[in-house]
Image (tube, rainbow, N blue to C red; front, side):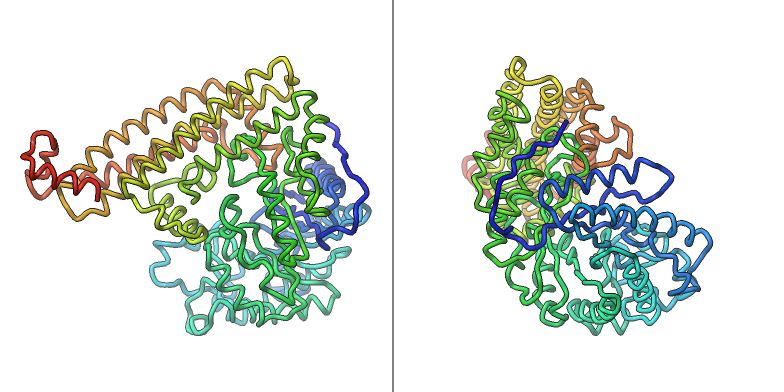
Length: 605
């Protein structure tokens, strides 16, 4: 499928820096000769949409670490295998940088601060962080932190500082790069994990200042620029705003600061990140997710957030943000409208979005172009209505792994990013009815979309029609699950909120019936998915940039499996013996009138 070029003469771009975050799927190993070719194609695509900077650093979470051999900067950590691995990857990386320069793109290297060789903490135990109280309950324990099998590091230790300087020094010595982008977190733990006496006396902002003061001189010595990426708020919601507004005046104004488009990671319908325009005189960079990690695209779902993206890009332009970034250019997706539109909006936020999209869709899909656009827009609305409750995201990628994580995502991670969320999320009768209506509307629209897709059979080429129909049917199975699951969940919250045994028994009976309805939707969803072309869904997700790591059955059954886990945990939680026989006599029509009135009062509380 050839690229569609709709570029026209424009004034100077609205954003000085237009970057590609290309660290999520890069493989710098030379063992597969297709790796370099694939990355070169991605850079070519970035140039086609007008990007002029690329942040690269191998697959998450190993950003930058495999480009370092320590042989000159920290010899105690150097190994024969590490030196050979770094040489191989540096060779591939340098070729990519040369290609980027040829295309007019300034390559930067991405660096994950808390990466290190497995032997480091054995040789330098002073660098091991002291866990905060109860960290084993609320954080991933160090052996499972996803980066190595070694513990978190203490940012106040001399050994950590020596390690950071060594790593940044080697990265700055890479030829062709314009700067270093440092992630200050990874997985579910971060650089500020340590609770030792030295770290405990410092705020997070002070630790950021110390780290910046440590590595900025290294960058300047080698003529490289430095950007700090505050992913801190990605998993910690409003904390990003609090910490970075305090940290920005403490660090050198030469340092750029990068953050997400939305407060609270890449949740597409949360409010815009409130950091925008508040961090001067620092250059601010804002990153957009154009491949849809948090709106189901990793399950082959298709949609477009073109109108929201247009509004947000104008918002950041008006706030004085200088850099705009995106991730998700890995391949030419069949329905990648947002990717190409992003490049246009990055240069002219005031462009005619409707006209441009119609022209783009007509060239891509033929006479059915506008109908496909309408379907993509409505898929996004269905996702908003199903993956969110009253404007607050509960779903992460689809369905959280268990009940605890569902509560965490909804109330701890997402609600703080959405004004008025806590009031809308209280399990009152009115709120629960509104949530049920929202989910019913999502399912109705999903059913309508399927009919509209089927009606395109004579208008749309099969190479687009088949994956589109496949995708919307998977979406419909997901949406059919979301409503009953949320019904059971909010009934469970109401159960836990009550102090009355009688009221709890009322709720318990309702919850059990809600669980049965939700489990029926799980069974129906699994049956529906079993008739889909799962390989086609995988192809769509891989074209968006997601790598298939499990069997097809496991991947596409995951939302339904997780829903079953949540429902069983709810069932187990409410299966408590009541304190009185009266509380298990729940049929109000058989009560005396006065007690019946009290029961109704309880039930509505």
